[in-house]
Image (cartoon, rainbow, N blue to C red; front, side, top):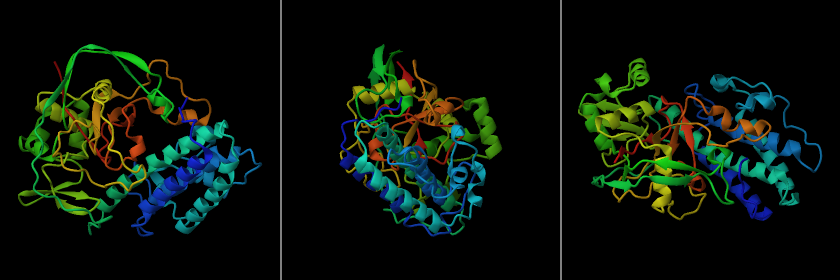
Length: 422
């Protein structure tokens, strides 16, 4: 089951609903209507589709089951257009063709959001705190926060494809800062307990809590920097098959990888496309937009390995690391901060790849019904990422949070930390 906090009152839930929905609209504010309808690759979705799909979730899983009476869908075809992957709900428009949905218009999608928001505002104050719909609404809010992060990563990829190199928003320019020394934190062998506990929200893939045995290991105090990754590139590591997994080497050849995604060379200098436009690589920032295969190859070159997700969670819990206190709904920073501190916080502005395949915890059971498809059906051919990025909603920064992507994915804000066996 997906765990939700039962202590929050309806007024607090209503206010969070408003803020989460507003955050998505705020993220779209810098975009033109044309920006919002284009799909730059099959894995990404247009911003307009994100606006509609997150609305579809509340319409389909909440309003359609409202105790206030029968709810009439805003449009009979929207269930087909904006269903993402819920087979139990019915057929859906192909993911790779979402950019072809020039209709409904952006104005119609915004009317759709306004319609569903009005219905939700009418429903929320009338619910009983013990109602099962409370849990579904919690899932819907966290689902929309996940899509907020996806929306921004998809927009970055879209803008990078434009020869004009447009900025999503102005960002501070990098400075000349020294990266913090990389040190190691050691942990003894032993039996540790991982997985979600308590009454705060978690997704079902974070449960159940269970014990794991770990051999002694060490983990680096910070992620790998862009400057360190440049040294890897300068050593011809993209041309050395001995550093790469076989499938990774095939992907590197097929995709002609020579550097992380968005990196490009002009003369003797490397530049990277950011949400603030094209700018010179800052050697003190964490390297990002690398695939699992690139991260794994770097660790081999560095004489180390990727941590397991169990090691990462244990280090995070045992060190007492937690996100810095701030408004959970503050705007994303849009670009990672430089690695100038001690790096022991383990929330690094960049997701870190682990060597762990995304699989169920012992005793895991997906929820019944369509919502059981949320996480469990993807537990194959994916790798786990931990920590969170500068785009991740702060309420999702927790030690037990499990993100997952295919090993060749690069458009998310993905980087790496090093680990080694003691």
